[in-house]
Image 1 (cartoon, rainbow, N blue to C red):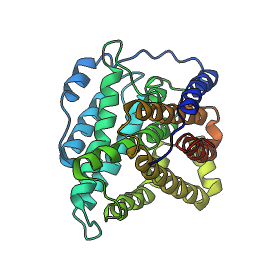
Image 2: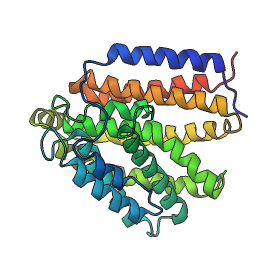
Image 3: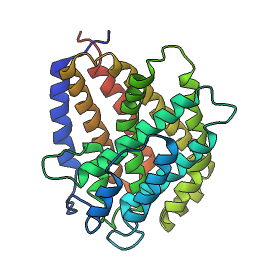
Image 4: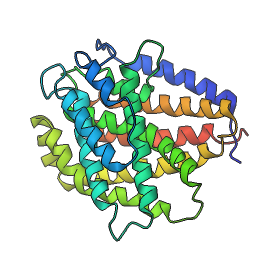
Length: 303
């Protein structure tokens, strides 16, 4: 059984909240998906049960987001959704391939992963009192902000989805299929890394500004290499977090404390990305390394 320091978790959650307030600049975007809130609510009314349903839902959401301010096709949440749709389509294409040992696991993980994103979208457009995870709020609050590039917006979404949602999606999948132990699920989990490695470079360049493209040309293959390291490290960390959180499930209060810390760490990492647009990749790598050390200290027995 993993140890858990309750006092440290509570103190850390409060300090992370204060840290985020210090980092965050002025943001004026109101909650919700106006003027298409009815359309968004209808799309999110029920949750898909298979990966084909996830892809179809992402396409509908894309059409809605592309209609929203600040102008058609420029909403910053749409930038992340487009990237997520592309990756999900590739996962669907690989699902029945010869390299996948347990397609049921991989598909269910993808569905649970997407449901967390859809739930976050729904919470942002819900009535007051329905909380949105802090990690997602970092992106949603900047949906209309032309000062945030599409590339940065996509990074914010990836940060929230991997550093916050992925561990929770693993737990939800294990609850439905059983905890894998030393089973074959982890190698299948790593197949998604290969999809990221293949598609992130062209997707990144698709969203980059002219200035960011100039930086990209200067660093050459080093940029792609660093992002492969980033994908590997963040997804490996998500699996480790899920294993540690799995052991906390029987204590609802400690589990909730751990989830709050994880959410606020991801939010601070997202805000940090926006404090240095010219070094997004370096900052995110540094933040990810800090996340691992920070969370593991909280989820370790006090000395």
